[in-house]
Image (cartoon, rainbow, N blue to C red; front, side):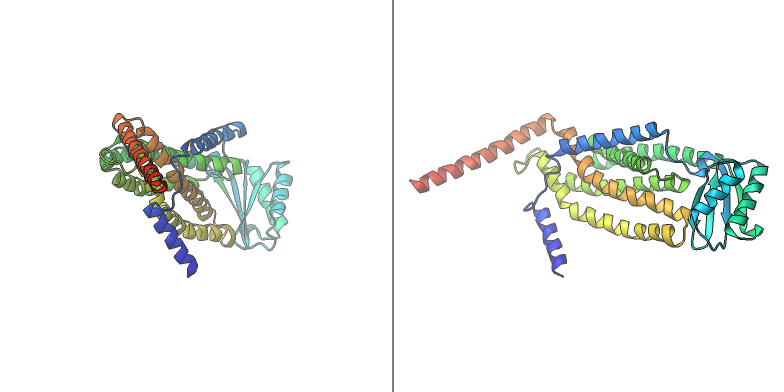
Length: 342
């Protein structure tokens, strides 16, 4: 109970400004880190020759062995290598008693030999080994549709946010944040060599919606805090943006946790209990994307918006008035101290 009370106190202190983290003031650090991540996310797949694409994208032959007693992946790899003259197979466990074996496209004769080898290796009957040829066409169609969906989403989101927030700079900052989240998520897939499947692509698109929601929540608070910024001498524009990020920090963390917990559960079930590749691939991309999207809103999107507007003439004059007020208050305080000592 005390922990919840402390967390509530923490949130109240952030909201009132009693406690504050300088996200905007340290934006140069975040931008350098972001630049390194973006460059790495682009260079890694280039150096490695692309992403680790699933069979739906590259095409190939797929075998499913059901009701096996031995779930060793090595057994399947050795069986395929022996039947095809050394071809490499990708073997994965599905659930408690099934195995999935994927290879490059095999000829009809090779397919028959591999089926026979798998029957012998796993000690099952012939009807327990199913073979299937997977062409790359469907995966390519999914990719094309995803790219079209991405372009349409970005264009519509840009227009709608520009209308809602009444400034294209806020809209542009939000789009930059969303694109950064997508690129970084893809970079994590490239670095870890996690397989990219159509389910993962769908997850990437879903991340856009989450990132947009999180960014809009924070930006709405920024708009509220800066509504009268041109006539205010309370804080500078950058300080008001930073306050808004701090005020919504607890909400962003809570939203991320609420989203991550069920996704993590699905990821665990899909990976370890059911061995369901679709559930695993979709939930993994969402899991990574939610974390990256939340961090992007705090460390990238809001500071970029502050950067876009910091040199506007009216805001520069407003910042000078704030500094003059603070300097005047400091001088008055020094005078009072001097009078007391006298």
